[in-house]
Length: 270
Image (cartoon, rainbow, N blue to C red; front, side, top):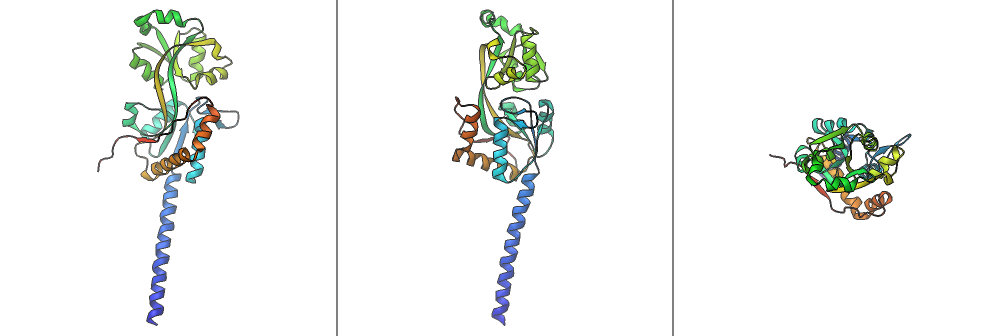
């Protein structure tokens, strides 16, 4: 009888341990699900089609969701709204975000997921004249997407008058209409932006390359560690097994994908 009771006790102990593990897994899954995801209309990285959202980073985010076992909706919103949310709200992810030292203090960055040059563009035939101005070029108005990394880069490079537009498409139209002589934009995005407004890359030319830009997935500072760990593990696995490279080269066949993984942000104090 004592042996029988001991077996029952052991069975209960194992069962309780198993139940605890199941509960732990379900809790982690529930926490991983508790994430609001925002992106913007910035082709070909992330953009709106007739009935859906598409782009290199969208493909990647969905692939990582599949690995984690979650299926949060991706909300396409104006950049300023998504950026405000990732700064102020808990458990928010925004993509794709350019890395800067300032942003490393304001949010948690995971990536890089893409690399692009930040380029100063002008209308076809104007680059030589603008370059001849030397330092005088910094007194001319330059266009940039409102609240974007391109505004920051233009300021740091010394441009004094920055005309901010509410979308990349608006800023490109303003350039071609002669509202200003230059705009700052990503080398991987400019062709699709022009195509979306009925123009081609043959209508513009480079004045200068201002910077190299790494793009990341950005999470709000108070995002739970379980969410961050899940997304980091998924990205590392995708880069290790080649699925990240396939996604990247589908969109950028002539570019080398960034293969390192970094998780950046302020250090938590105990």
